[in-house]
Length: 282
Image 1 (tube, rainbow, N blue to C red):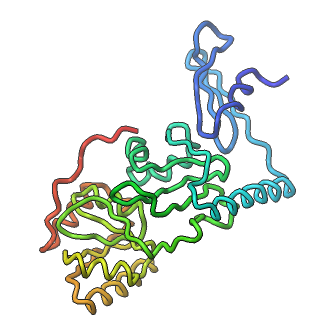
Image 2 (image 1 turned 90 degrees about the horizontal axis):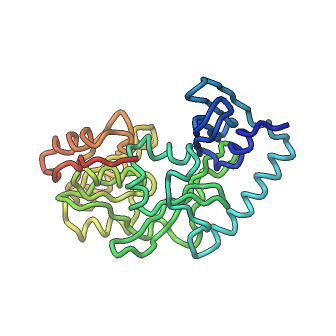
Image 3 (image 1 turned 135 degrees about the horizontal axis):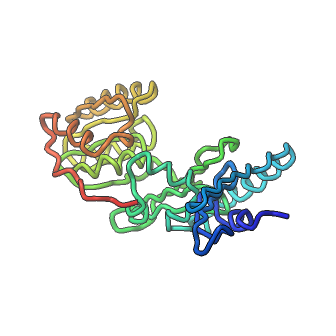
């Protein structure tokens, strides 16, 4: 017969936890959880502890699961609408989905403000890009499943280099590789635009020339990012755009807000506004 707590734990969404009664006494003292690896329980009163691992998938089950998800992904990518259903409450997402953002120092409060959400049908976090007026520009969805060969699902029919996503305001424009880095850097008192890669698109270059503000190029710390930095800097200088680059040992989205602010402040023509150090509770 299945343990009673295990029935409750199986009913939780992945990453969820709660307290339930235990037979050692009155009250909800047994903490249960549902993790990707299985289901666990710990009693704060009698120290009962148990973990039940998730059964291994057979090859046939894995193929069937991936086929089901990929069919949903194809439908989502072809639609002009955002993938549904949408769970906007990060505390109800799978733990791994939240950790993608927590490791970047982005809180639940910020995730809600950004409009990011979890879509159970395609089992991905949907990263939404909107313009200043709140109109949808683009979306991409990140999988947590390492067996899924498609890490990012991108909206089809929309050229990701045909628009400019703008985060924050400030005296300079910082170019980053991705959306999360732009958002994170913008909280240090500057405006940030993601390249959506490591190349400077014609559309984005045109926008920079028209804008006229000085530019800081701050791409990721890997080999591709460093090669992209040189390529983007060369292009900007050929357009007559005043530009400086920052090369850091970690990607911008992984640095603290204080570190980001300090690095920007060291650039002569960059005077970022005060670092946003207000508390962001998970």
